Amino acid sequence: MTILYLHGLESKLNPEKRAVLEEFGTVIAPDMDYHNNSKVYDDLLKTYRDQAIDCIIGSSMGGFMGYYVAMKWGCPVLLFNPALTKRSAHQEIPEIDTPKEKQRLSIVLGGKDEVVPAVSNLKFFSEHFRPTVQMNIKIRPELAHQITLEVFKEECSTFLKSL
View (spheres, one colour):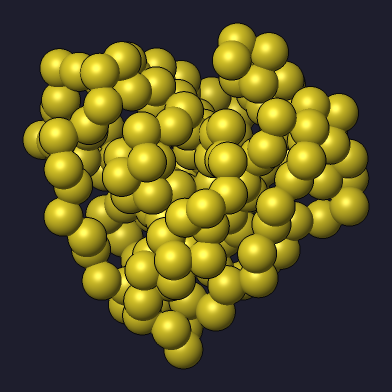
């Protein structure tokens, strides 16, 4: 299995989280500069267009990117506190074609997230509802914006084992 991991605005995939993902397959985790490149989406599509990506996992700004790339490619995606409605770095918002039949979208939201409040993402998904998308939204009341290793391991394991 090939996993495309998309990091958040001021972060990278740390070794402990990489090890969790590597238990399931090959991990591709590009270093993205959201502040100085407003076309990260286009770059991702171009760079990985010939790569067989089985799923995408993204956090915060990487969740924003992961959402749009997964909708374009039709692959399963797991998003942690995606920055779909609130971003401090400008990125162009791509058009979404009609999602593939049975597109899988799993979202984990932090009940204590003050950076990207869960309610803003819930509103986004209610306004962008697509009947062909299998959507699973989980709100973790104890979770803030940062994803702890314990939560990351639990949610990624559940998601990846379901593929």
